[in-house]
Length: 133
Length: 133
DNA sequence: CCCCCTATATGTAAAATGTCTATATATAAT
DNA sequence: ATTATATATAGACATTTTACATATAGGGGG
Image 1 (cartoon, each protein chain N blue to C red):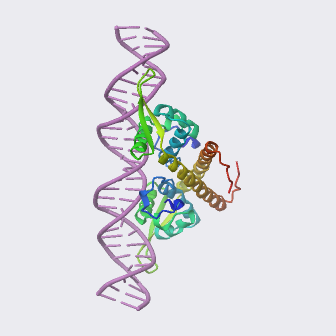
Image 2 (image 1 turned 180 degrees about the vertical axis):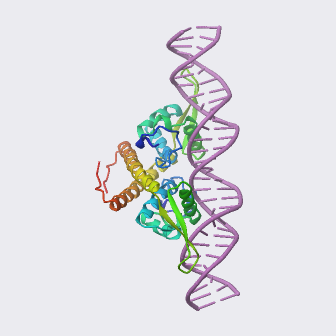
Image 3 (image 1 turned 45 degrees about the vertical axis):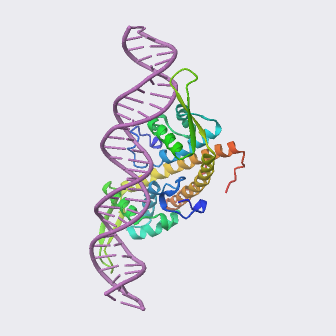
């Protein structure tokens, strides 16, 4: 985090830790799995699409999230030993998982509104013009 | 959280816990304190302005955040025993605290972009029109 | 053989969070 | 009087989350 401020420090050392890596990971995984079933390693690599920097993705965290998703019945998994290399655990989104994805979309929409409300107030207090990008 | 889904359950029981109450609390407190110095109880009540529901604001959490902000030199505090009632701890934003507030604004802006990127992908996958509200 | 890439997983300590409870002052109601 | 309510702050405790390091294992290249 904090690529915004140009610092090159460790993951958790910046006080403006607003990138909410952890919580945001779940909906991203669900959305990726809705595209196509795949395994953790590929999911990990696809995460940069959502703005996750390589440096802020911890394999352990990703795999743990996936196992937890399965515990909660949001994904299924099965071992794929067909192709060469180490066995892959293939994840597949369940109906319940897709439901949760839709719930996340609603939540994220309202989060955006919340954050924009904050920015409006911020700009009002500092008399800065709100640039729309 | 999850007022979006109509559920009336406990604070931490919903899986789409995307409202990031905790992390978002800090910039809100800093922004409020930039407006005017005040004490925790009033800050707590002002938080609904940022979309915090009464039910999701725990006094303990707010006070804890404030004490931590002070530990980190982002606010100062002093006791106000002038007026009647229990003593109030008056908080005042420091220069460092204002700096962090600006950093938060940048972070929040990039978070919005991140979330919007997610929604774009979501709508693309489900062939829904993106309503701008 | 060693190194690197692929692939998954655990151990552990620190940090954040949720929930409950304690303290104290003042005021309004019974 | 005493009871309840609003103001005001804070700590205890358990659980959850997170970061970071490490472990295991297959397979290809030098």
